[in-house]
Length: 247
Length: 199
Image (tube, rainbow over all chains, first blue to last red; front, side):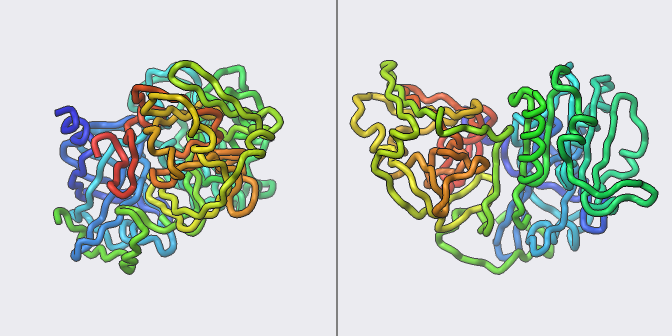
């Protein structure tokens, strides 16, 4: 039956934590062993489901942080105050523990290495995660597609993937924006991403770049509006928003 | 029961009978959309209903405002797992717009400013189940939530409630819309947890 084939693609699979890395004091990258994973595109997400001993279940969506790599998948979880799922995954959840994962989900906010046009990535806070998957997919595919990343965060201590992004990569320009506190030694004042930021650090509209914008709703609204005002084709501005919800 | 995550307890069981499976209560009103928010001016806004025979009926903003409206309070459920209870809206019932049309269509494709589409059975839009909504919480609907007007079909997952709606196309055959093409469910009943194709 066709239904079996389709539902098989999004079946819940048991995953076990293989490894983890703390990105910041409140964000943790989780590396799962996920036997039978069909692979995914950079930018897609998964649903993660936790089941308590009494059968209570909670599930949340998380962006994948790395391109497809066999049975290994990675997500980065930001701990949210009072977040029943994120507090467990960034705290007591230990190597060897099980969760269930299904996916991949989402076929719009994705970057394919065969796409020739330049790419602009604009991240607000933990919105960096699916964009990092695109940067890593570019490297894994060995393509030279020109990339620009604009990464906005409140303070330098909140940066994810700091060491990896510090290593220069040919064809990837990175611009950091700090909204509350600057790194030591950097002059200026904290500010939000604005027209000047995007006019300076984004591709000119006539380059026909594809832009991926991910972050909190207000951030994404602002950035997407500015890109359109600067002449970018709205159909080439792809967005992924997360609301100020608990997980 | 299947796979248990050791040590996971979760928050207090709400047992709220108004919360569909897999959903949690959101106090705020998160936003889900795929691209920039279209800015649609009511001066040029137009809403079309096209039948399967190609017959087109159009309303300007002033004409929509002149139609009988309803105030309604409903629970809404987003596929990204949040639900919001007792949301207050005002809008024009779909029955008012298409109730009198001569049609044999069973399906509808909703089309939006900005290019978004979503497919629904026509029966799910009738008998007081769906509206073109233009006020939320007593105020004009803001652009990020789909203003000036959006489709609202609260008994289905919220991606079916097309923001910035500009028309309904009545069809004899079901065809997938934007998210449905990307693997989301053709119907999207939150009580049956129909999130993705095959659910």
